[in-house]
Image 1 (cartoon, rainbow, N blue to C red):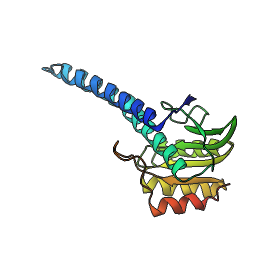
Image 2 (cartoon, rainbow, N blue to C red; image 1 turned 90 degrees about the vertical axis):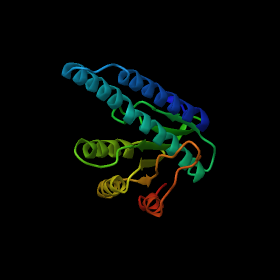
Image 3 (cartoon, one colour; image 1 turned 45 degrees about the vertical axis):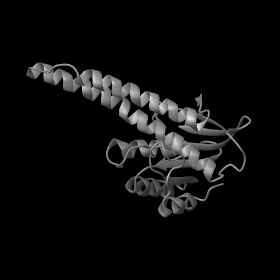
Image 4 (cartoon, one colour; image 1 turned 120 degrees about the horizontal axis):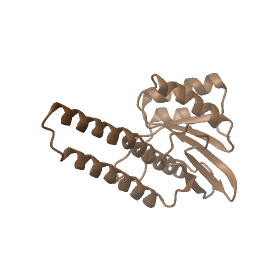
Length: 194
C-alpha cells in the first residue's frame, strides 16, 4: 500500500493519471483511419486505452472521496495516516484504503466505482465484502450508485458482517467533500459500526 498523503496530493495524482490517459487517447485519435483494417486497429487501440485506465482513474477518485468522507464524519475520532491502493481493484487481498493510528489499523475500506451489480461485478462484490469482513478496524464499503448500495447492503445483512455501506458520488475538482444521501447515512448505521 502507498501513503495517500494530502487529499490535494492524491487528487493531483488522479488528475495526472487522467491527463496521461487522455493524451494517449488523443494520440490514437490523431492517426488516420482510411481503411477497414486501419479503423478496426484504431478502435482496438482506443478500447485498450480506455479499458485499462478508465476504471482505475474512477476507482482512484472514489478512494480519495471515501477518505474525505471518513475524515469529515470523524469516523476514527483521531487523525489517521491514510494508505491506499490506487491502481488495485480489490482482488489482491489488501483493502483499497486503510487508516492507521500509529501501526494500529483503525479503518479499512473497499471502494467500487462500478454503477451496476451485474455479472462478474456481483461476484467481485461478494469476494470483496467477505475479505473486508475479516479485516481489522471499522470496515466500510463505498459505492456510487443506489443499485450497488442495495446489493451490498443485502450481502452485508445476509453475511452478518459489521460493514457500513456508504454511497458517495465522484465529485468535480471544485468540491472538496463528496455528497452523501440520506440513504447513505442510513446504510452507514445499518451495519452497526464498532
